[in-house]
Structures are given as C-alpha cells and as structure tokens.
Amino acid sequence: MRRLVPALLMLAPAMATAGPFDQPWAVVAGDTAPSADPKLRPATVSRVDGESTVRGRAVVAPGTRMVTVDLPPRKGSSLGTRETFELQASPCMRYHVAARLEAGTQPRWQPVVRSSETIGECLAKFKVGAKPK
Image (spheres, rainbow, N blue to C red):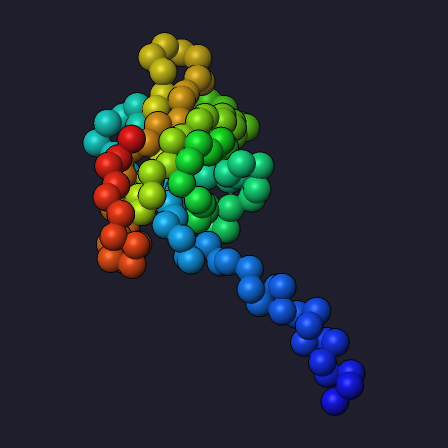
C-alpha cells in the first residue's frame, strides 16, 4: 500500500491535465474533394504550429495558427511542394484547406480555406457563437 500512494500522486497531475475537447476547439484538415475549378487542387495539411498532423487533420485551440500544406506532384513536376500560411481559427469551426494554382506556367500555388463549417458537438457543449473567418 505504501508504494501505491506515491505512484498515484505522481500520476495525479497527468490525469488532471485538460484534453483538447475540454474547451472549445477547431479542426484544420486537408480538403481532398475534387473541384470543378481546374485551379483548385486537393491538398494535405501536414503541420499546424510546427506539430505534425494525424492523417492530415489537426484539432487545435482557437486562435492564430501557422498551417503547413503539402501539394503532391503534378503533371510536369516530379516533386511535391509545401507552403505555410496563417489561419485565424475560430472556436467550434472546421476548416477544409486546398491549394489554388496561380495563372501561368509556373508551378506556383497558394493554400486557401476552401470551406468552413461549424462543429455541432462543440457548439452544443460550450454554447459559443462562431463565425467563419
């Protein structure tokens, strides 16, 4: 019994830490849906604030986030490319990120938020109003 008490005391801080769903959250994910716009391409979110994503998706706290997006190789290019942009994440919002190709022959592109939607479970749990940004 004496050995059990110190072990439980050491675990107590870890059990008391808040998880990502204990406060309003936002989700940043790559948009893999095809688009009718030929300049809009599916992209993969690889990092948010320097941390790797899980399966191209990250659950984050609301606020300013640095999102790194990867675009796979395209016709005429053997290498994929990567861009980072700033996203102002609102509470209880899901953001779908894609790549918009620039006009011309250069393989240049910019990450864009293709769509955003509210997360119903988050809104119901925290009763916060969220507007897409």
